Length: 400
Ligand SMILES: Cc1ncc(COP(=O)(O)O)c(C=O)c1O
Image (cartoon, rainbow, N blue to C red; front, side, top):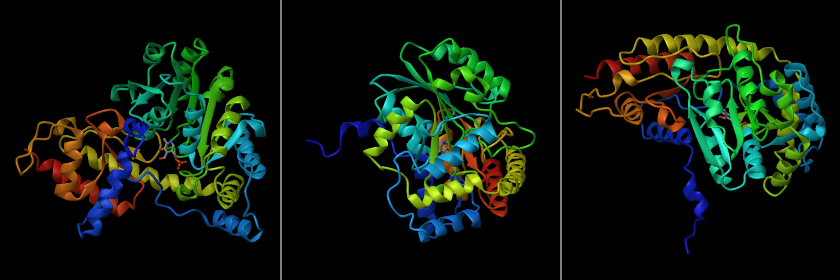
């Protein structure tokens, strides 16, 4: 009898975590490595949020909370949806988990029968297919070309839907491309979904606030109210509020789904930490002006990285609408040889070369389901980004 359950064979450890770990190991061994793999803001959690956590601790908010989250936090989430998205949810239609990731996990575990299909536009966040697989679902990957802005076309969605389709996962702005759907683009996808009422929508809005220029954020339940009864709107405080380590994410949807998700959570983590919940409520209810300040910094970094990567021979980098990632094509480097005589055949070869030759750690596109590309996170200090891009330019120029 094997020690490890066969369900583990279906999934792989997160490739983005693997890159971050490898970069940290090389650094510890004395190598000069710049990590561009991280999916978290380099800014610290704002002070007023930390103070709310301290106050909660001192006030004795140190006991179990309701599985779905404290009433105070769910009220803050309810107010957020009303204020920012024009969406009305009851407190029984809101659940809080240990990060947005647990919300997705709970949703898939609560709804998928073996073989149910989960439509995932690629490039995708690495966890979607693996969470679907763990829950015995079948990921149906729909490749979204760069020519379409890495966004799913309505025709492609229509083609992907079958009788077994249970979920469509939408993520805008996207990890890994930063691409975001305009209201019209989202409406066109929702139009397709209206004709298929067995398909649930998971709208992953975790990068809602990380947007640039004049981009206006929209979410499925808002642009197509008919779909709201079968939409799970997912969000969290990790990215916009710089709270990745606090582990608070939330979802809103029909009470039947939310109840089922709470049931799963009641037999796993019970709830996220009471102190983190108090901090998240303070984040949502408190001042929001630091978000624009952070975005101004991110925008300058995006423009710097896009411009510098486009000067590297063999790379082509689109300028995305949001998040803190770019997803440059390395097609122009494929087939070229390194100084050591190694031919680059894939984006994985390319990122391995960047790490070995110049000590720059990025994540290969194959991990996100679309090649030959790689993901650069610009949630890093501007001077480091500049140095990293110079090294990438040098590495590309050295290829023959
Ligand atoms: C697209 C996307 N969704 C969800 C998450 C989950 O974030 P968390 O679990 O920290 O809330 C992430 C984190 O990287 C992400 O990139």
